[in-house]
Length: 276
Image (tube, rainbow, N blue to C red; front, top):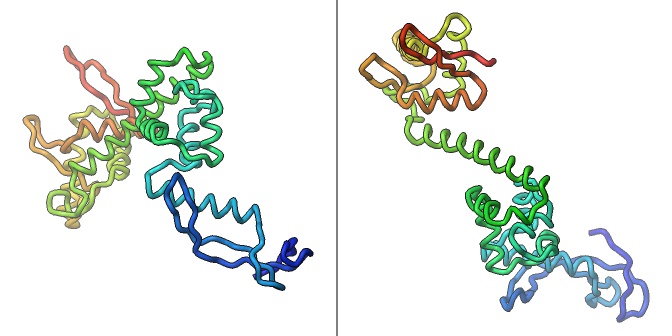
């Protein structure tokens, strides 16, 4: 290990020192936390030498162990949470009716108290942040209000996409089986099949369901494998993708297609247009 020159109070002169690792106990909020600490020793007399940098690192490690043990957010977690909503330290503190220096202290290593930690963890849920925004938005500047309102809308939209993904994964078999033509469902394959048809005709939604069905079943008939892995349901107007409303909505939200309502005689129907 590389040696470093430090002042040794026992030798009363500058000496080379080495850093060793040793299990040490640090008190954190009345609880003894054991960590593998880094200790500086004088290579001449063998005595321990105070090193503020190593002591700070050891204390930080003890805090990190305490945080993990008690589910307390780390400074990095708090910074990430705050930036997710586009808030400054002061703006977040004002929104929560805390002292303006509070968030700064937590982001530079101070341990949040139990109540503050619970509030910060709950803000991961956009609905909780929306509650604080509705209750205390007057504490923000107009620019801060506009930015937070926009971010809340974006986060809710992203959450909707994630919920749709979860719904599809829960309700559509992901394991190859006879139901999906021995191919796990692939939303990207299905989207490109849809785009292929939409580029070649005016693609009504009902027509799309038939084309997808015939394509997957024809491919399965030839090669014992479907194209998309979609599962089809027997509906009154013929076969259609199971959960097709969610699947089409997901493809539209992810920018593959656009669905427009257009007249067809005395009625209206939905037409699929490709976006890529």
